[in-house]
Length: 299
Image 1 (cartoon, rainbow, N blue to C red):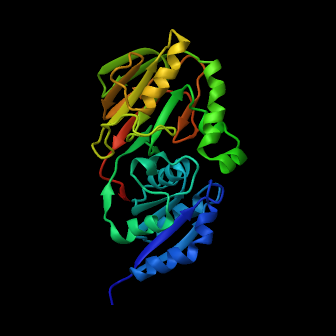
Image 2 (cartoon, one colour; image 1 turned 120 degrees about the vertical axis):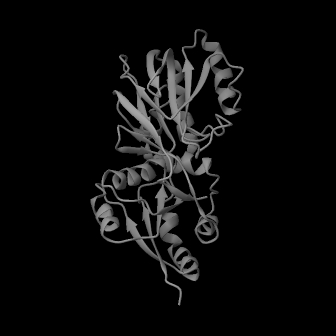
Image 3 (cartoon, rainbow, N blue to C red; image 1 turned 90 degrees about the horizontal axis):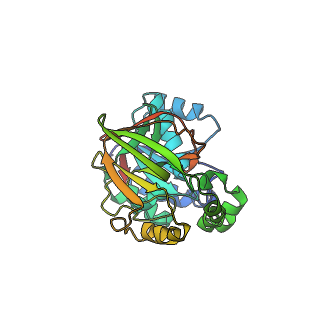
């Protein structure tokens, strides 16, 4: 008899659609076992310590992560910081913000999620690393709109989904803050801009905007950097938002895009909000590098 593979399904009971996991647990278990994969279910506790101990002391072939972008990156950060090699990763995007899954074209269908594991081969995917320890999968951003993802009421998120973010974001348009952005790319190229938003992206999507940078890749070892410059005329804001949604960045003078393998971002003097995969971050000096060849995802 062929040796069974072992999978562990880690889910966040507080994520937007976590009940999908429990209500479909029999389906998930049966389909995986039919392909020779046994399953262990793990509900995340607040400090993640038990999860890292389990994966440190017991070998799993597949790590299934259920939740939004923040849950995924937090799990991988904990493993990375403990020098635990990543098993092959599958994603069940049950959070409110699932930019990473969207960028990988993972559908909103639980049977399709299972098929990714049983019928597909895991592929190398890049990830971002902040100050040598914190993993992010989708975006690291500062400035306009960045606090919406972690500042939106959780009940609204569960009830209205992505629309809750857009409603909360309208208020920020009345209080746009300009700041001095200072970035060094690959140790030598200095970038200085008066900006209202910057985002370090892994892939095409961020904050519900899909295909923002149409040519972006998730396995080329490069980060894509989006900078929205200071807007002199507030009447230009709708055009900028439309261009972001339509991936029309080349014809907009307010938007600048760059690529690098690593970058240093200086702490912004002005008070700005920072988000890391939709979770609250800190305005501080950071070094960000993109890591290739250490993460394989079923997609």
